[in-house]
Image (cartoon, rainbow, N blue to C red; front, top):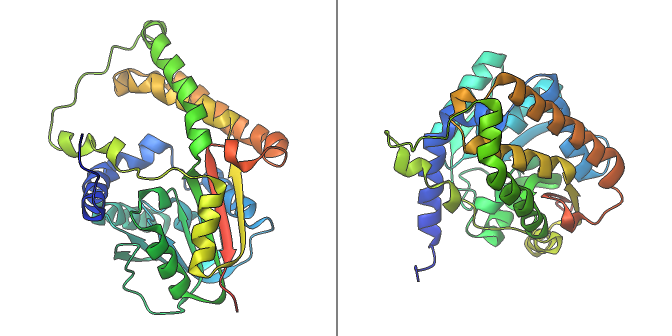
Length: 302
């Protein structure tokens, strides 16, 4: 039996994997900085807060990656100034390229979320997307988030995997792998060839970078233990998640260049449609624990 991963090894794996993945990250995950992206990000923050999104003077994004949240919030006018941190310098380089292309200015800092090299009480908003499940010591990280927030400041994290939702999502993934040969024949794509070029070892670390899945109470406990108040945990994506993971599982079995654009458009538009179905019909009626993604919002006491 392999020895449990140490905190240092988890940080190392995350740095190496995300450095290697940075150049293709936006294309892989369909990250958008137009109207669609802004709408998605504002919608996630709105759901996390349970109210309309105010304007924040100064925001800190944790694990900012290529800038999906911070840059879209800046473009939407919901944030006036942003500082973006990530443990991966490669991701921050891609973020700066995205910012330059969009005509935005943003400060980037390569840093571990559990030891932020930033002054106390500097930000009105601390936020992140799909990052908490990568962090070895969540109690230490939440303590840092509280420290850098001004009294009365807001915490928002979205895109965190739900333990139950992740188990449910395994069903469409398994089904997709069973029908993948027939699907490839239908779209006339050949089976994916093994990647053995530069970086293959680091890109193969994808399944090692995720170290947590959560129940809603897990996220609430970490926030309250750090000293946050008004903690709120909600869920999003059920049908959209099943549809999206089934399609991604199919696509992963084929040579990427041979997946038809018509299929990609169908998969993308279908995912957006089902996101809206989830939002309008399911997210307010079903318990957060069954959704694939969890969102947590809280406030530093004044």
